[in-house]
Image (cartoon, rainbow, N blue to C red; front, side, top):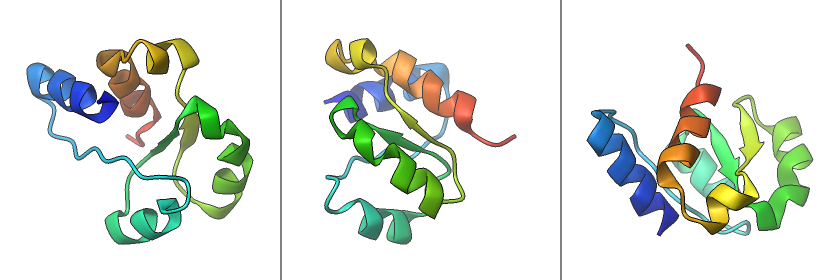
Length: 86
């Protein structure tokens, strides 16, 4: 649901992005296959942040718990955009 809300916010803003979600168990495979520019982690897997930061060369951050819980797709999208390299 959050992915859809983020995609809707991107479309409304005229921003062309690809957004996907994966389980913690599938994350490495998806990262290798899709080569994202940033990685946002759900608050429930924040304990993995350090591991991902060590193993990846892209920005990694944990989604704000309130934005996640309230499904604030626009705010989570902005978090991702703020992390994107220029």
